[in-house]
Structure formats: structure tokens, C-alpha cells
Length: 112
Image (cartoon, one colour):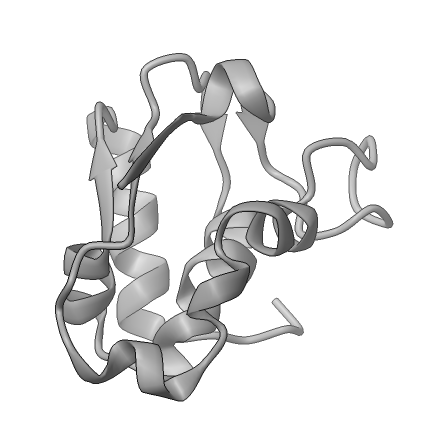
């Protein structure tokens, strides 16, 4: 199983949904395509087998738009609890954890 140090490998400010938002860097769609593309398949979500560990140790900011597009996107396949088992999130600070939980709870919306 892969562990990704997101801050070092992708970006430390995870706030943009896509290249049209904010500074256009470190967008969630690009992140999802690069690291989570195999999860965009209904059959993968039929079990709780862990797929990836995402390390947030070097992430300074995690925004709602990024969280929604990168992670809540998968609520079309699974409930938040299963998403958190399949994708293990480590070293989130309390604010990042709250943002992630809220976005997973509310579900995916491409228009937020």
C-alpha cells in the first residue's frame, strides 16, 4: 500500500477545486486523478480494503473545495465511514479533520 506525503509530493496548500480556482495550483481534480484514480469505480467500494495512506504532515491548509472534490467525490460510491477506511488520512490537524469530516458528511457537490 502506498503512502503519499501530500505536502512534499503534491502541494502544501490544498485549497483549489480545479485549475480555474484560486492560484490554479494543487487542484483537487488533478490530485484525485493522480493518486485516487483507481477508486473511481463502484466495484472497488464493495469492501473496506485499504487502498492508500495520505500523510498530511507537510500540508499547511486543507480547504473545503479541495476536500469536496478530492474526497467527498467518492460519496457517490460509499458512505463516509467506508471512505475513511479505504483512504487512511494521517497527521491531519484538528481544523483539517473537521473540514474533511464536514465535506464527507455533506457529500459531493461540484457547484460549491
